[in-house]
Length: 311
Image (tube, rainbow, N blue to C red):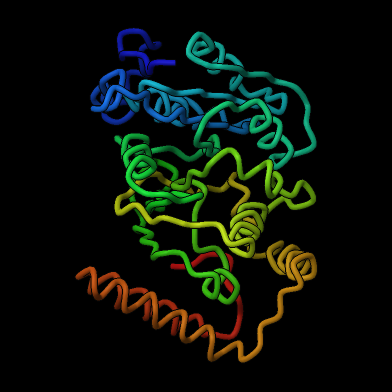
């Protein structure tokens, strides 16, 4: 599917301007320079009663100007106006449904099983992509062999104002084990064939399914490629699941450790080495301020507990 032009989309609310309401990424040519097709990108959005935010999510996908897109929305039976918003865009969707499900993880997997893309990802219904994200990922896919392609993200507040940039480093299994989540789904894409080899998201997990999935890929030798750019935004607000993450993380983390037989010998030393590696990467990139701020936060938190996110 070709991404639609702005004039083909419902008009934005009168108080909404800028990306992705009144601005789009430039429309890409139908094919790559060598006349081969762009890799198909399949996006799944799970949704439940996020009517306040989902339209921005939808537009951030459709406004990419990407010529080979497959977009699927799996709604869990919303009653807050979400369904009416989705209907306004249904002619631009490969598939959507609104029906009860057993939670976010199952909804994502149901969407993934319908995907036909070369690359797949999911974007939550209160988060969104940044301009040019799909082009950056597709160019990386064409340029280098990897299984997972990921970039940086912004943490934003309820109104979409940037709270903090989140810069990532080249993937490290040690960091994934000793620090927690080192990749964010808001800015990550991977080859669909990985599902056939390594399975879908673990539906027994409600909060740490992304952490477990990327850890599983790392443990099985998958190749990760860091794309140097900001690709997506994670929104923190009172109604988001992540508000409850710290309360629920330890129990799910323990189950993940048991599932994958994870042990952490010399925990403080290895976590310290992982932190040193990240800091050196930021310094080599000339990102001195970010490196210093990250060290301050990490030292303030202490280095004893495994955190659900890497900052």
